[in-house]
Every structure is written in C-alpha cells, then in structure tokens.
Amino acid sequence: MQQLNVELGERSYPIYIGSGLLGQPALFTDHIHGRQVCIVTDDTVAPLYLERLCATLKDYQLLKVVLPTGEAFKNWATLQQVFDALLLNRHDRKTTLIALGGGVIGDMTGFAAACYQRGVDFIQVPTTLLSQVDSSVGGKTGINHPAGKNMLGAFYQPQAVIIDTDSLKTLPAREISAGLAEIIKYGLIRDADFLSWLEVNMAALRCLDAALITEAINRSCSIKAEVVAADEREGGVRAILNLGHTFGHAIEAHQGYGQWLHGEAVGAGMVMALDLSRRLGRLNDTDFERGRSLIAAAGLPVSPPAEMTVEDFTELMSVDKKVLDGKLRLVLLRQMGQADVTADFPLESLNATLNAWRQ
Image (tube, rainbow, N blue to C red; front, side):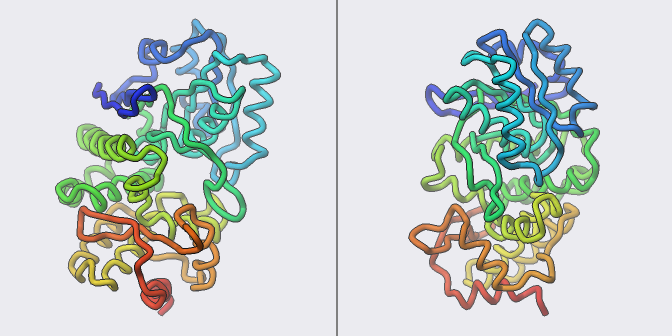
C-alpha cells in the first residue's frame, strides 16, 4: 500500500492506494469517530462491493443507501434519498458517510455530508479510475442543474480517500478510457515527464497493468494533492485542473447527462483547448498533434458532437463556474506540461476552434 497526504492544516487527510484495501478494517476505523456509518452506493456497484465493505465494517451500526446509477441522477431528487435515510434512521452528528462508487456517488455523498446537520464526516472509497485519480481528492462536492454541471455544491474535505485498485477489474473498457482522460490532463497541465511516460505506457495502462496503473494513480493523486494544498477553494492555481472541462461540461449538458461519460467529454474538450492554445501561438502543430494522439490512444473522442453549434457551446459555456464579471475564462496550455487560466483570447479564435469540427 502507498500513502499520500493532502496537506490542508487541520483538514489534512490521507490517500491510501493499493490492492485489497476494502478488506482492511484499520484503514476505516482510524477515520470513523462514532458508531453509526451510512454507506452510499449505486445499483451497479452495490452487487460487486457493498457486502464486502459491510463485512469489513461489521462492528458498526450500518445503514445502506443504494441510489440509481448514472450522471442523470446527480440531482436534488436523488440526493434527498440520502437525507431521508439518515433522518428516518436517526443518524446523529457523529455519523460517518462512506461514498462507495464513482464520481457521481462521491460528489453526492460529500455534498450530503456537508449539509446533514451542518456537516458530518465522510470517507471516499472510489471504485472507478476517474474518481480514483480526480473527483475523490480535493473536497469538491455537488450535484448538477439542468443549466450547468456541478453548479450546486460545497467544498468539503473527506476524512480519508481509500483507493482499492482491485475495483478496476470490474470496469468496462469505456470507463477505463474515461479515467485516463483525467490522468492525461495532469501531464498536460503540470508534468511534462509524466506526459512522456504516458505516451510510452498508454497501451499497457488500457490493459490495467497492475504496477503501471498504480503508478499512474499515485502520480495523478500526488499532482492533485499538491495543487489542492496550494489552493483549496479554487481561487487561483487549482482552476488549471479544469483543462478541457469548460468545453466538456457543455458537451455533457447538451447531449444529456450520462450520454457521454465525463472523461469522454473532457477528452474532446482537451483537444479543443489544445486547438485554441495552438491558434493563440502557445503551442505548435507538433504539440497539438502529440496531445491529440495521446487522447486518441486512450480510446477517447477527439472531437465534439458534430451537431453542436457555436451557439450551443457559447450559451452553455456562459454558465461555467470560471466566468467572472461576465467574461469567460479558459484553461489553456502555455506549453506542454504548463497551463494557466486566461480570458485573454480573441472571440474570433474561440469561434474558430468551435467551428473547427464542423467542416
């Protein structure tokens, strides 16, 4: 097992990464401070891992909440089911919520924990590659609104993140590719050496080579922990973690949440961000093709839906959380391995990018 730490003073917490961690009670008991535990999962993950986790936590008073699967259910109505269960079973302020699942479950459980009795403890147990390397770390919680993704939520840190790499064995190939999108992101924005490593090892990563996938998770979480420690509430550098996300969130909202996986939309969105970076003279053609090829090698889309118009994108991007004083800000690359957030781009260049795939 490997351990990293997210350094946030009194809100600091560990990230455990390894095989078989779902069966290790000590990893959980160190972070549970009462007798009541509520495990929140979905109807895809529950048949695979819920009973295993319940056996690990058999000495606690357990409540199990099984939600419907998918981004389409990341909303108030589904979140209310968690609150209903907690209240009907009289869970108090010492209860601990455990998010057992992918990013949707992690985001909703964290938000429920932030709200229930004005804040109770929670633990992230991410079971998808995307949630292991991204959404489980950093304390972003929330739900979607029809007008925009993740527009309702809170910054609320977990007590621990417990990443059992064995859970990846039950993921379909499409979900593995979706997770690789976020891993590629870290190389593009922060670590050129990691980007080169990914180019060499992408085929093996898609096949879930145990040592390599553990290394990719470790390096991704290390980068995210470093960025979050520097900017917990996304007032500055943390925004670079959203490379491709403004375009990607627009794709998800337009297509209907869940039609494109989050990582798929981010993959296409990163290609669009690379294209705009190139149009602004930040990258050359070789850089662009290098990034596009790596995203394609991960099995991800490299273009947005053909039916999306410039108007579709601009309307949906206008409600992005990085919009300030009415100005759209985007994460763009300065060079491979370095990114920043800027509103300094001509509208003509943005429109050229949005039109580039409508030829």
